[in-house]
Length: 361
Image (cartoon, rainbow, N blue to C red; front, side):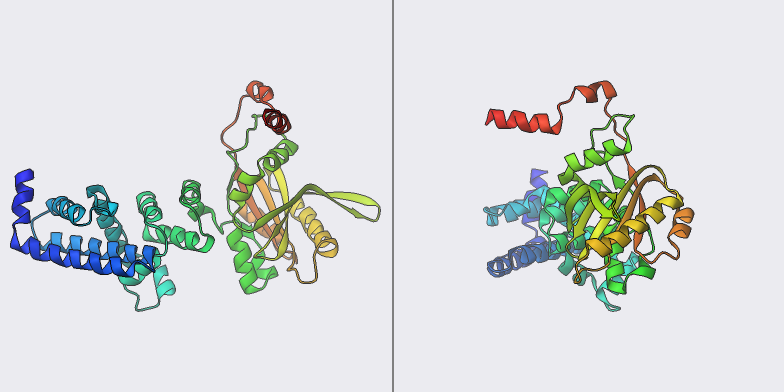
């Protein structure tokens, strides 16, 4: 292999091609002072394209990447982006979008009828390289990948949050709930509300035993409110559990109450352990009337209801929401990991843990 690398380095065709790559890197480094990530990713796109095209017109194969890595690492010793493995990722990244972009009709709506692959490169260049590597490694289609790219841009996700959302399969869960938003909310607001709701929700982070009750589920979600808010998504603010509202001297309690800062509306959440039944929609509709009367500010949008059940019939849910004037979404939750009840009972409560931490301090 060493002799082959030496021979390729003396190859005039390779040397001429290499000089072109080196010039692009130097040019990019000058521009990168003000636009670091965008310029870096634009450079990687060009390098990926150059590698793919050169391998097509030559018989160098992967030897080309071996030699290119060796030469660039010498020429640009302070830059760690030209390792053999990273150059292979750059090639994979370029091929992933270049070969898959023509198979995604939705991109016409995103980029226009005359979109080109370079437009895709401009979009993916808006997120860090580490994010890009994770996305192309874990996504199977360009459509799925660009979903995570745009969500990362929209919500400024860290790499850890991005991985959490990919592993939680957000792409296939977002906007999949049964709702009546189209009939009850104005277009843009309805679209936003629909995007906010997932189906199903993943509650595997909850330390529940197999024989948990509805109140156990509610309490566990509140005890793990940070993880719950992460699962709900960006923009949710927690207002309280068993939120009491008194009407005609009678107390009513909302399971969980949130406010969404982008939707500018209260989110009334009802949790149900069993299968969805039509009566649940009627009760939640009542709570929404109450929330709009007693909680909603004149500048707020109509409150939105969210029924999270263990299971549902989509047909029954659709008929249950039909004709209701308040916006309601019906979705499911998944809870597949349980702690043995005997083990769960031996765990300290959140309050006990908090007390212990205060003593340690």
